[in-house]
Image 1 (cartoon, one colour):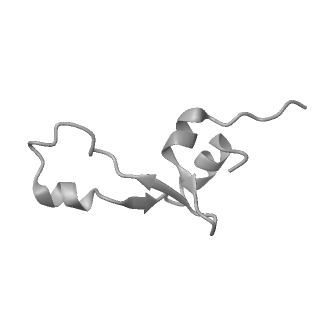
Image 2: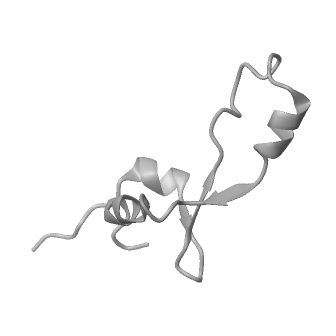
Length: 65
């Protein structure tokens, strides 16, 4: 059997914590920020945990993480 490949787009977007949960960044924070309020931009800071309904799909994209 050949080795399974990691989806490189997923590897750039997700990191696995030592507890096993997967962290991700928020969407809507890259551009067109002038029309967004300061409060909404502030709340998009930091990392978020991947929801458990999407966890299996993310783990399938990163088999060795």
